[in-house]
Each structure stands twice: as C-alpha cells, then as structure tokens.
Image (cartoon, rainbow, N blue to C red; front, side, top):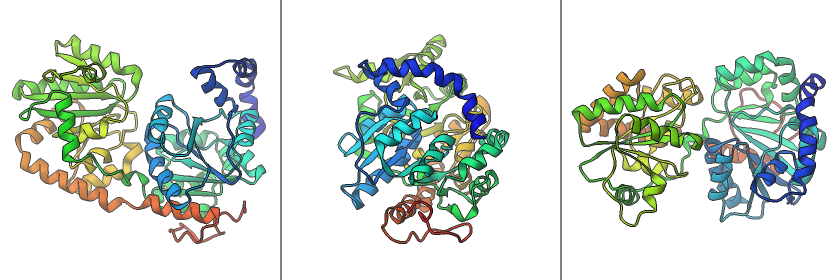
Length: 445
C-alpha cells in the first residue's frame, strides 16, 4: 500500500526536487514557505518537544487553548506549530507572537520532506488537530519512536467516503497512530472502521467548546463605533461565508431591508481571495459597500455603509459580540459549515443552513436546546432574520440558551491535556476510553 501511495506521489516529488534545490538558495516569504513544505526548516526544536499540526484557521483556534495550557503546565516545553494554509499561518503567527512557539508550514507527505522535517523538529510527540491522516508522516514517526496523537478528532461522512476508497492504506497508516482523542462515539466508530484499534480511541468531546472568553460589552461598543454603527442600527453578521453563499446572504439582506431600513450587514468571506468578489456582488446590486481595512485606516469613521466586508483576520469574534443576529457560513452550500459556537458564546442563537457536517454535534446540541435556527435558502434566512428583529425578547432568550449550551460542552481541552501529560510522563490521563486497552504512550515510550 505504501509503495502504491508513494508511486502515485512520484511525479510531484520529481517536480519538487529542483524546486527544493532552488529554494534553499533563495530568500523571501514565498521561498521560505515552499522550503518548509519540502521539509527544510531552519530552526530545530530541543529534543522531547511537541509538534502540533493545525491545518487552517479553525484548527489554529482549537490549538491555541491547548498551547496556552501546555505552556502553563510546562513553561520550558519546546513547541512548534505548523499549518497547511496561509491564513492559518497568519493567525498562528499573530496568536503566538508573544509565546515561545515556532510557527511554520506543514511538510508535503513525501518521504524525503517528512524525514527532513522530523530531523529538524526532533519531537517527542506529534499532535494532529482534527482530521490529519498522513501515511508517510505517521509511518516515519513510528520508525523514529515519535508518539502520535490526534486531538479533537472527527471524521465526517464525506471524509469517510474518500477514505473508504483507500481503506487498506488507511489501515496501514493508522497502525502507526498511538492515540485518537475523538469528539463523539460516532467519530470513534469511524476511526475504528478505518482500522485504528479500539484500545487507542478515547471519546473526549469537542475542544471547540473551549473558546476564549468572548469580547465584553466595552469591546463590542468600541467595534460598533469604529465601523460607524449608530445605536439604533441592527447589525447582521454573516460569518465565514463560502463561495456561492454571498449571493444568497445578499438576497436575504435585501428582503430584510425592504421592511427594516436600519438593518446593516457585515459580510465576512471565509477566504481572503473572495473579499473583492463579495464586495463586487454587493455593489452590483446597488448597495453601498465598504471594506473594513479601508475604513479602519480612516481617522474618523463615517456612517456605516449598508454592507461592510470584513477583510481582516481575527475580528470576527468581536463582530459577533457587536451584532444582534448571526448567520454562520459554509452551511447553505455543501461546504461542511463553520464554527456555530463562536456566535453562541456571544449570546446569539446562530442561524445556519443544512450543511453543518463539520460541526454536526455542536449544531445538534444548539438545535436541541432551542438555541439555533436551521434554514434553507435565502427565503428561510430572511424569515429567521425577521424573527430576530421583530421579537428581540425571544431572540435574547434563545441567545442565553446558546451561551449555556457552550458552557455545558466545555472541558475537552483539559481532558486532552491530561492525555498529552501522560504521554510526556505527567501521570494518568483519566479520560473515557471506548474500550480499555494498552496504556497511552506504551508503544513509543
């Protein structure tokens, strides 16, 4: 299986070889990025450090709590955090700027790239956030005696359909994984179906409930002032929208504006390359639109335009705190959904579409608590927004239920931390297993 897998990777590897040789002689951000993707990391960790891989923005946010908790317990622990996407890298460098955490890009799963990266990092433990099954990396860690653990693990049905196509390879790769700390029993069953022994599975809950404290009223008021919102203007935030979704959101917003002229929309596309397209779509409809970066550079904020494009990183939580209604994107189109818990933590009952496979458990918990609304299309979204605007007391009650649901789901980060402490030699983990089995870290101690 590994021969076949690496055979398929042969052409990309051959293309990458001269690129790697050239990049080693170059300077600049792009050169550094691609050199790291080929395993050339300039700085090494001290032995017995921890390498955390967090693919993109959502995973970096999950990893952030874990990083802070680890450093609080082990101040001298060497840490490296890698990301797959550039947006994830930008957030990581910003979030950990004041911490002794080395940030870089995750290597491509070519055997030479993986070997170079591991030789540079020299970790005691590799922590993979959520769904990161890389066959060559896991095998090389097994050969070197590097412990491997998945935290906040999840496998959606969509991911499973792809993994089942290469089930023999997944079975071999997961044979090198020491532990999977998964969000739900269903996730654990899917890991087991792919070949991970049940003795290496633990159900922990979702670490995404362990959010940083939400922005307070003072921060929310400052944000509203900075974007020119008046006290009587109703702010709708459409967060982390996916391609094809901005049009639906703008359709719903135009319907709302016909009845509520003081409604305003803050539109936050998930990916930076879509900021311009979102602004263009709003302008095409004749809506007054601005971009947050341009407004933030102004000395005196003008009145809020009808639509503001949030083209900055890290401001979405405070935007939710400043809003009266929140739609969570990636859910009206088949993109798997984004974090429904962020607005819930701010006391808003999130509105989302039917496609929330990436957040199925939190979405289900919120819906069961009467603390969220699931909608279909522009008409459903407009109807939900009408309800929030026209019955604020009911909306506030639903928001409080959302806030309680987030608090009740918290704790997975500390449970995962105890497992990591056990692997690093810090004592028993005490977290729930699907079945009893070998001690954590026994295979690589």
